[in-house]
Length: 116
Image 1 (cartoon, rainbow, N blue to C red):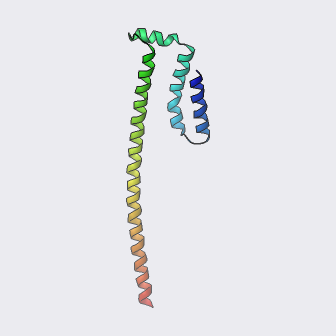
Image 2 (cartoon, rainbow, N blue to C red):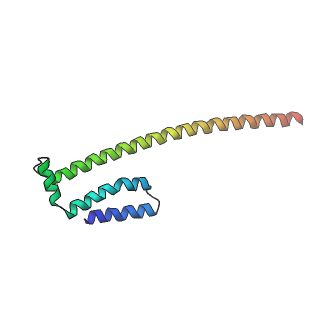
Image 3 (cartoon, rainbow, N blue to C red):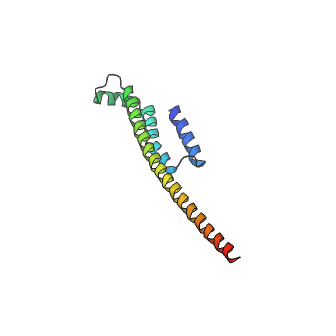
């Protein structure tokens, strides 16, 4: 329960300082609810263990946590890849624009030199 409160406090501080986006905060909210639920109702995990026929029920929390972390890592990789592609396209467009600007500046310079 203390761990859940610490995580909530950290997330709220990060959200208020705009260090974490609201959509990311919303992703963590269900996880925090689960932490509180298992903290207030510890027998719930025992019931889940019986339901899934697991001899050591707390391992369910660890496996579920690892699964959620893997999903989160995959989502972050997709996001990073998408941003990298955007940055490459922007860099290419910027290079083309700089080339065009330089060519136009040369044309203007040559016209001004020819008029003198």
